[in-house]
Image (cartoon, rainbow, N blue to C red; front, top):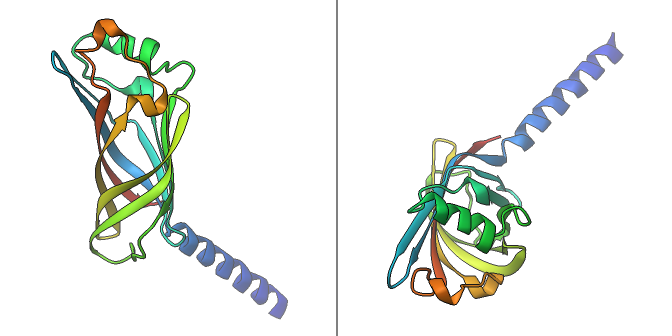
Length: 184
């Protein structure tokens, strides 16, 4: 009988420990990534709600991704087609990713507003760049909201701009991210 109680206690302890560990991992429940190209003759905007991501708050590790073909809102269907086929080459490079570590020593288990810097590898078009991206983080009632804005230089990711569209596509793309994360 003692042995059975001991086994039940071990199982109960293991289950609660596992649950406690999982509470430290947050995943994206809703998110939006949008970009804008402001060129002399045209502004191009697109966005995606197909954001996936995990944040392990104890180790301050994160990984986010978005499928490139999930972006919508272009000025025309032809523009979206060119984005996927000619520039991003979505069939070869289907995702953009950002993974790394939070630099600041913040406790994201406590409600509050924080400005953090995330250092990691940002990959688009198969080219990774080490980046430090500043974000505003709001923690409230066990949920984490992340907002960020940064720019991406097409040259840094080997995305060419043909001369024929030089005045319609900016070499610097502005990106905005807004994600809500909840315990996994």
